[in-house]
Length: 137
Image: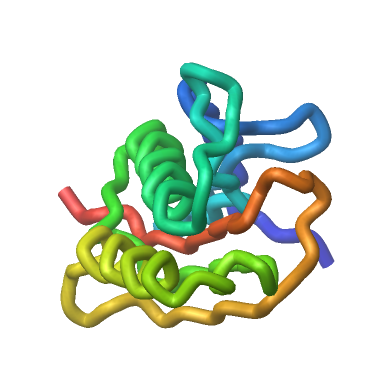
């Protein structure tokens, strides 16, 4: 059985992406954002520390959502893939959580999962994926 719903690739030039996947896919009222690392697209580097990478990854997610006519407030589910070493410094971990909480401040807050993983890029400490619901006109 195939789905009759149209799927649309979302492209944000100022956010990380790959050749083998879409940055996001829109299906009906939903936007599914692929895992997005905390890579600074202007410099091509990963900032030092989990707090800086959390902030950059959220900025990158925002760029992808904007390309889909969405905002962070439209996000209903977040998965933050975090390396075990990312939270090795307690102060950094607290700051990273404060950054996350400020960014995803809409009520109700998005559902969230935060598995500890090994990421394929050694400099990356975090990758965030999200599901958003497009706002109604």
